[in-house]
Length: 226
Image (cartoon, rainbow, N blue to C red; front, side, top):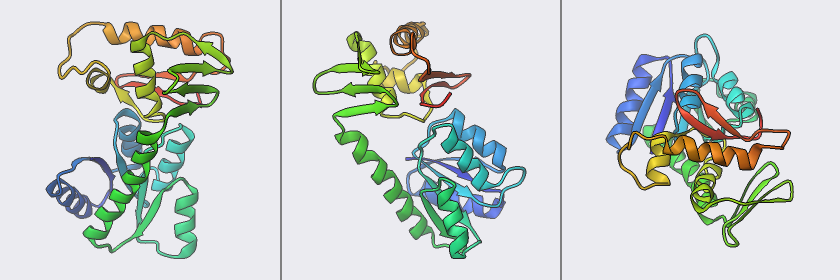
């Protein structure tokens, strides 16, 4: 899995990154709140490890901002603050788990596995996907928004399914090429732009709230909030 570690203490960050990489995971590092927020919004991760006390923007504010943006990636909050009230604040801010320092690496890795496992089955087993008033029936192969049936071509249906399964997360062009077209290379064409444009016309045009957003320099995201 791909893990974003947001930690300002260099020794702790190195310890986490080394342990996670030795366990076979891909790790991205950020040392401040703003850097962590930018990394989370611009790249796709399976889980985030968020230190609570960060320079410039604390970890809880970062998590709260991510949730307000519709970002659904699971977050494990790390903190030296161990009182019940501290843990409650962390979870209420949008964290999915809370681990106090000092911690055992084996426990941290186990908790990350649980967080990613919780998220994955819901996506794999779902036969109906939805976001706001947009609904997809994978068995009937139908899509509606606000009760209105949308006529999607097969490729558009596949793109929308891919995006719905990752709602609230950035989907890069590389991910679309691999997940929708089965390409392991960039054909250097505007094929994605053309299909995304058509899909946007069908799911957003005529509706008050846009759901399909372009994340400049990164890719696309389906989210309910503008």
